[in-house]
Amino acid sequence: MSILEVKKLTLRFGGLTAVSNLSFELEENTIMSLIGPNGAGKTSAFNCLTGFYKGSEGEILFKGQSIFRQKPYRITKLGMARTFQNLRLFKDMTVLENVMSGMHSRTSAGIFGAILRPPSQLREEKKIKQVSKECLDFVGILDKESRLARNLAYGDQRRVEWARALATQPQLLLLDEPAAGLNQDEKDQLVSLIRRIRKDLGITVLLIEHDMGLVMKVSEKIVVIDYGQKIAEGTAEEVKNNPRVIEAYLGKEDEE
Amino acid sequence: MGNSVGLMDRFRKILGLRKTQGILLAVLSLLVILLPLVANNYIEEVATNTLFYIVLALGLNIVVGYAGLVDLGYAAFFAVGAYTTGIFMKFGLNFWLTIPIAILFSVIAGIIIGGPTLRLRSDYLAIVTLGFGEITRITARNLKITGGASGLVGIQRPSIFGHILNQITDFYYLFLVLVVLAIIIAIRLHNSRLGRAWQYIREDEDAAEAMGIDPVKTKLYAYMIGASFGGIAGAFFAVKMTAISPETFAFTQSALILLAVILGGMGKIPGAILGAAFLVLFPEIFRGIGQMRMLLFGILLVIIMIFRPQGLWPERKG
Image (cartoon, rainbow over all chains, first blue to last red; front, side, top):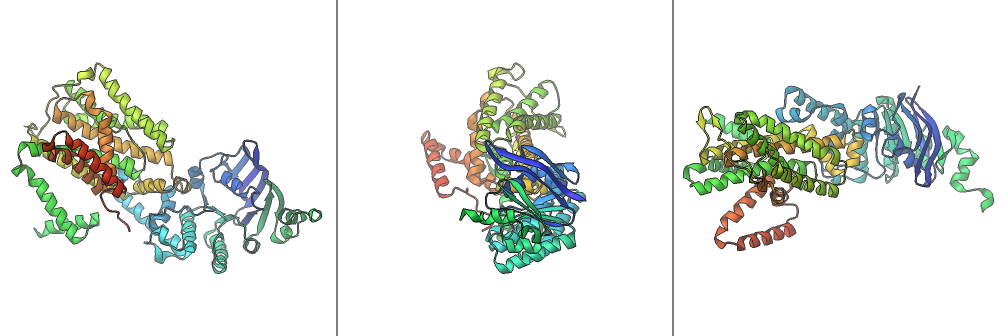
């Protein structure tokens, strides 16, 4: 069953069409990549899926429900989490507090809970901490929970972002260039982490990535876009040998 | 005795204070509690005024410090609380029963101003809140029920267990209780799911929204809570003064409260207390130098903001 269906998605900024008639489906429990040359519209498409941009036309179904032009926090609540291309951590808060933000959509204490502190609120706080610690443990930085996010090494800040997204308890995780700025060692760990997210947590993964080595290694399905349009779709092997993809990345032969 | 020491110890840990700071806090509390025994009426009056501004500063701190929203019209909420209590008491309602109504009305005022405007960027929000503050004052000036320009006079003094609160000492202790409650509520809000949500939004609104936090609703909560602090303070203000007039709630009042929060250090509870105390006490202490004192006060504020833009109270984390 497809967890995500994108149908004829179009996004225009004034006269510029960033995403044009983009359609693809994402099967539950798979790892899929959205790739394309610089400026192809990957991040724009991604932002339409997560609600940060409002698509101009088309339809996006998540678990059969329309999320087209929905607000980002509602989409997160429905079970789709995202990370950001440029780290967007809460820099002056601790690592644990950062990850605790993910549990917000799964908890409910409000004004009176905060002021009167009934047992239900104390239980909830305990659960928020416990789940957040599990997520930190999963990405391997539980030992840094009380450090300030801004004081972590770059690779570890990335991990905080992943843990924070996992803490929203999603069914679909969207990673926006997760390998950007990581060294080879960290990239290898990222590959195994993405596999564990799918296998151990049963979460479907969609990533946008520039690092072709990583994309080819980890994806079961790849959608290639250029100029906002889908130009190819298939397994790593199929996409690698598709002439249109080669053209998009390297240019036409007769142009040289 | 051992029990009360244990209690102090627990309190100290909740506040995250070191032992010396805990002792300092205990001594300070004792001084504050015993002050009316040694002070004359004038000192008591000033101290009561200080406590009153501390409540307002703690309330505005939730809006400005916790949620990071600008509010240049905070006196409006304080006005709504004061007028609500004043008017309902004129109709013969008991003072204590007017408090929930005052809270309700100020929260409604908070929703009216916050609902449509919290989607705006902060500089626009500043202008809208400024306008709202003035609208409230001018409305109070022109309505019959609020007594027009001369305001409401002859508001009755409240009584508790048959004892009429009409001495300055009574109000000193009343406001002290309010301050303690306000501090407890402010601390609890800060260390809660809601308090964290405010902080997430303040640090990065997009990231907070990606985590499933509804920014408009969360900010509105800050407005509602800030408004109810103002409303409660206003209700008590009305019965302490027995007379209220529109000019009490002018822009300078809003600016003064905002100044207390910024001066003390936004988002910090001891900062708000310190800021409010400084703003009330400074002009009183230097009353001797007459008109010059406001000039001196202004210069001092500028100097503080240049050298400590983060406020007087030190940062929690390094």
